[in-house]
Length: 273
Ligand SMILES: NC(=O)c1ccc[n+]([C@@H]2O[C@H](COP(=O)([O-])OP(=O)(O)OC[C@H]3O[C@@H](n4cnc5c(N)ncnc54)[C@H](O)[C@@H]3O)[C@@H](O)[C@H]2O)c1
Image (tube, rainbow, N blue to C red):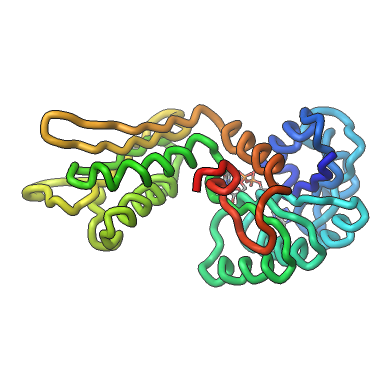
């Protein structure tokens, strides 16, 4: 049985992950952590997330180290906010608890330090801003296809719900970076964000990025490789948040076989590096 602790336990991702862990025969939820001094402390996490008592009480993050030690947690799953995740990574690394982190928004400096903590603690860690299995295979396809189709015009279209605040999406930006990297083009020079007015002829080097917003679209990404007389379109569509949770479960099932002391990503988990 893999003993799993979840921090951000009452959040959208944390609660979904807990429900999925409870369905796994080879995993046991041993701790549920929430924000420091949370009013939810000592409440049963099952009751808080609406599935009834499961016998695991919520603890505040001020007691993270103690909680991880007392529960004999082998892995900590973190979907919180960047400053909280940063602290959790520091603590888990220092006491030899493996990590799966989906929290986004780390600064470059934090990212560098996180690699040092993981190395120092010689723990196994999966840190990925998009845990979806399909999206990570999508990135791998782009990596493999782009050098073959380097002469084609390449454009990226993403579509999301009408509440999304940023554009283009982080996933579209990663796709763009993967493509620019493979073509050895500088991402700061070749990105063209939407087109309007008399923009002139398309250059061979540019990579267009376009954002569609509407209704309740969870997330769609298409890369178009357009040649003379033909085009290839690679599309990923996310239907719901379950895709991220499935990725977390895959990472939990893989973590023990990953390299220690190194930050792994979903490509490592999926064996598609
Ligand atoms: N990697 C992925 O595939 C992926 C997918 C979805 C979301 N995310 C990221 O995961 C994070 C969480 O997303 P969400 O939608 O679940 O957010 P959310 O706001 O629903 O949940 C976050 C939870 O963390 C708790 N929290 C805040 N500070 C804490 C602390 N110091 N210690 C412990 N818990 C603390 C909050 O109380 C909340 O319950 C965000 O950074 C989001 O961008 C990543």
